[in-house]
Amino acid sequence: MSMRTVIPVLLATVALLAAACGVDSGADSTTSTSISAPSTTSTAAVGSTTTTSTLPATTTTVEATTTTSRAPGTTTTTGLPGEPIDFGPAEGDVLMVIGVRHDDVLNLRAGPGTSQAIRDEIPPTFDDLVARGNTRQLPSSLWVEVSYENTTGWVSLKFVGYEGDTTDETARIVSELGETPVEATMTALGELVAEQFASQDEPESDIVQVTAVTTGDLAEVTYDVVGLGDDAVRGVRLHIFAEQSSGGFSLKSVEVTLICGRGVDGDGACV
Image (cartoon, rainbow, N blue to C red; front, side, top):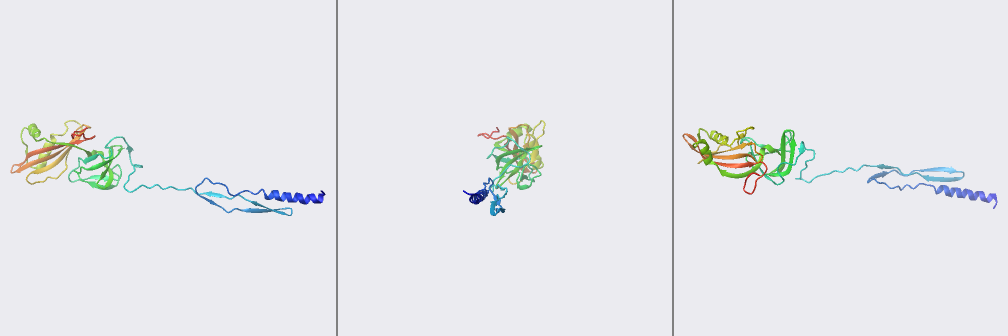
């Protein structure tokens, strides 16, 4: 073959090889969301032959965001004050309010601590709080999550307990006092009776009037004596009845309900 024939053949071969060297733009992406820029091309002249090369596409990665939501009526303890502890009422336990004055309420709060928002107000003698199984410890107090009617929130563990057995203790009170007590007012009579149940050691018990005095055929009032220095028996609730006469209020009967700290057995005794 003559040189005049070889040179055109070589030039044609070079052009074919140059065209075969373009880069594929369909690269895989491991991201869930990407935005690809249009492919760009560059053209260069080689002798009398034009060569086109495809440049790789550029990819911009967009980070996906995830939002987690919870169904209405559910609760979460994430981000609450204090530390969770394995102590306190179990989920489903029924609790009573204790040690709250008759002219006051127990605040149901959005979280543990007195700085949390108030969601509801619970009466002093309410006895159907349902524990949610969460207790948290703050530096100087314990808080338990409960449901009050249709609202869930937190209350101080100091002001709730388990309702135990109720007994009539009239004869014992009269025996200890030496006679049937008579006082000028119903509150004075109630305090006298409550003192018979208070702790004689440190710390002193709290004596709290939890209902207003009512009168009818009999006068009546209710007191809580809380803080007996016993983990099982936290206190007692006293339902006091009296007969009213010109001489004042004479004790008729005393019904005593145990306030338990850890729970109640099948006989109503504190465990």
